[in-house]
Image 1 (cartoon, rainbow, N blue to C red):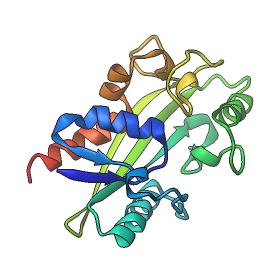
Image 2 (image 1 turned 30 degrees about the vertical axis):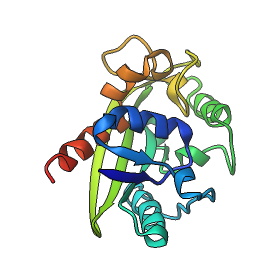
Image 3 (image 1 turned 120 degrees about the horizontal axis):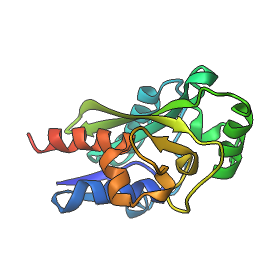
Image 4 (image 1 turned 90 degrees about the vertical axis):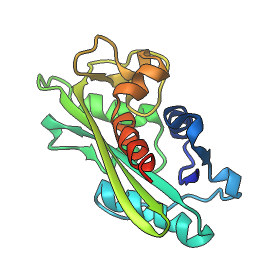
Length: 191
């Protein structure tokens, strides 16, 4: 089965391709020769994920999926949430976003957080949602060299290392995106 993953994020694309395995052929936006940013104008993960999937589906008429992910920190009333990618302003680096989180949590004991991913799938003109999450905590300093986004400061519950210190295989197995992808794959195998 061929699906387009509506993202320009090469880190996400690599994770998804590994998670989906060889049963599914995942095409990127580059394979469609589409290099523009996809709009994200909603204030929910579900809304943004479906907006991105619809954007590509409407233009190319392909079966596709998109995701939106948010880091939700308890002590910050769920921030950065749906604004995780733009938490430190327009076009921030991963470090800019992490530094803002670490600054806001300076001196705060409650470090509980969770990552949530929503995948929106448009398959044969039908729409579906799959959600995954992982509980954990925000570290006091960045650790590790792998991953992207907030991976160097997020340690999942039950583990001694943060996402940036884990192998991609382990991260995919336990992560928010990995959990959402498992639900997507389980669904795709039923059709």
